[in-house]
Each structure stands twice: as structure tokens, then as C-alpha cells.
Length: 122
Image 1 (cartoon, one colour):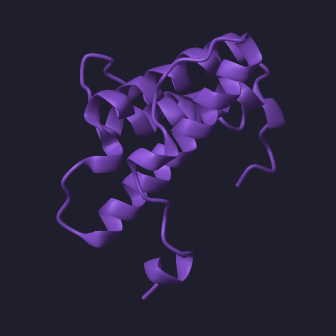
Image 2 (cartoon, rainbow, N blue to C red):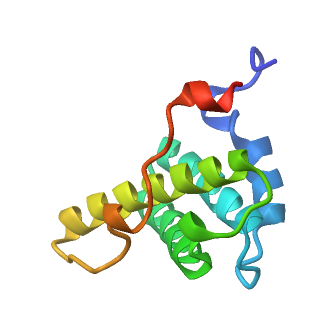
């Protein structure tokens, strides 16, 4: 699939589709997912500033939505939300340590840690 595409251009179609999903006025899981994809692409393109903007928006939206405690219909949704909150917590701690700014965001004690992955495949 990628044989005839230069390595630095392989993410373009994913970037374009994710950019279509991004509506910064829509605080939703879809917007968070678009930010994560776009942030990952910025990382691979060695664009730290853009990466930081996308990931920060995703983290703030997750905080606004209280993603770790959001009511869900299915146990799998709960696990995905908790895992996402854990990822955002780690990212924000990494950013805080990098910049020397330590803000009070999520703490591990405010939500349970994810269950073992075996639980997800039952």
C-alpha cells in the first residue's frame, strides 16, 4: 500500500481525514481522538509545537468531560475511558516535568486503574 509513497508523506491521508473530524468547539470523544491522531502525526513530522497543541487540547477536553468518571452503557467503554484518562495523565505529567509547571490535574486516586487486557477480550 505504501510502496510508492515517500515515508514522510505516508501520514497525509490520515492527517487529512482526522483534520476533517476536528471541531475545537465540539467537546467530544471524536474531537479527542482526532487530536490524538493529529498529535501523533505531528510527532512523526518532528513538529513539537503542533504536537503539544493537539495533545493539550485532547487532555483538556478529557478533563472537561471527566472522561474517567463518565457514565457509560458498556463495561468496555468504561475501560477505554479509564485507559484514555491514564494516557492523558501521563502525558500531562511528562509535559509538566518538562516545563517545570506542576498543575493539579487528575490524580491516580481519582479513578481506578485499568483492568487487565484479558478482561477486554472475553
